[in-house]
Each structure stands twice: as C-alpha cells, then as structure tokens.
Image 1 (tube, one colour):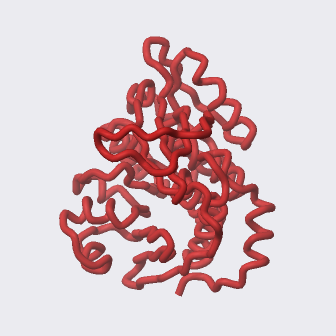
Image 2: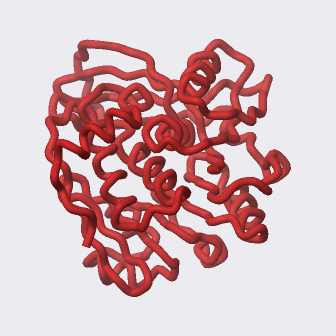
Length: 298
C-alpha cells in the first residue's frame, strides 16, 4: 500500500502557438481547467494506471477550487487524508502549452504549504511513501524521517529542482529526477554517470524525455528506451512515470520491469491534454504494452 504526501492544485491551461518569452504577450486559443499538482497527479497514476492501493495526504482550501481535485482523486480510487485550511486558497497552477507540446508552469502553492509533520497519518500498513518538493522542505524531511524509522521505503521525486541536504538524501531509497534536477542535486553539470557518482542513494532514476530513462541501482546502470508516440501535451507525463514506477515496485516487480511500465505510462500521458486527465487506466497501459514490443531496461 502506497502513501503519497504532497501537493494538489487546480491547473488553468491555455494552448498557444509558443510559450511566451519574458515580456511577451502571446494570443492563446483553448482554455481548460484540470485537477493537477505533482502529489495528486502521482497519486492518481499510482491508483489508476498502476493499480496500487493508494492513499494521499493533501491540503486544500475551503473554496470552490478544492472540489474538482477531490472528485478526480475519488474517481481514481485514491483514499484521501485531507487537511482543510480555511484561511488559504487551494493551490493553483497556470500552464501554457505550445503547439510543440512544450509547457511553462507557474504554481501558487496556497494550502499546500500548510502541511506539517503533525499531519502525517499512521504509517503501519504502508510499504512506500512517495514525496515531491511542492510542499515545505522541512515537512518533506519530517515525513521521510518518520517513514524511514518504520522501515517504509521512501521515494522522492525531487521536483521542482532544488539542492537537497545530506540528511534528506540519507533517508531516500529511490530518487527520481530529470537531467536538470539531477544537475542541481549533484551540484555540477556533467555526464549522468558523473552526476550519479556524487549522489549517495541506493537507487536513482533519471528521466530523459525522448531518450527514455536510466537507473543506477546496486552499482549497475540500467537503460530503458522511450516508447514512440505522437505528443500532444507533456504536462503530467513525469508524474505519471513516478506513480506507475512506485506502484510496480510496491507489488514486488523488479526494477527493469517497473521502468518499462512507467515509461509506457508516461508516453501514453503525452498523447492527451492535461495532467490527471491524461493518465491512462491500467487496462489501457496493459493494452499499450502488449502492442509495443520494447524490452525492459537492461
């Protein structure tokens, strides 16, 4: 059983020819509103695409923005542990998606920053705790410390990018990052192998976009090729990858098989608009894998 502790936002999404440069105004086209937030996206992916029994600790304001988020989590089968914060707005994100499927995102954390160490539910039945960095860093550390003390595997998607303390790194069992996040944590830019050598965690997974992903575990570097799809919107693809990876690991799948499933789910998410709305079902993922003969990571 998986506990996701993290952010929940309502995403305001505009399609435009390109992402605005500083000082530029771009005339957009379609406007839609979707449930989002890295924590909530990953919880939905764990439950809907990964088929894992998933709980989520989240904070919401006492406002209309909270309702679509709760409805999406409930529809995915996520069990919610909700901190209601009357004096804060529910988190929001403003997303511009270009015709090239690139995006630019600005987040207003709102109630997300109200989560504290005292809000963590009992951990006795969980096998994995999945965290991100859209809540306060001291809260992330407290949750990781509590889980580690009870023998629960701690997975951190270190996004948005920021430097991490040695204390937090020592609590992590699986670190999930993209190339930019890896460089920030390693404190230098260089090859992936050189950066991984500077980070002391048992397992590190690096997503590489159209180049797939790789993982460093027990002294072995695994590489997983990307699945080819027609990309519509990459928003939420990384979160889908994280959720499905943890769901696979929680049911005992070996890392190469978990990477293959996570990569396929992330690819499928790119074919649809929105964050949680783009996450495939477990049946869709199984069908996709059956039609794409791409070997597990090696």
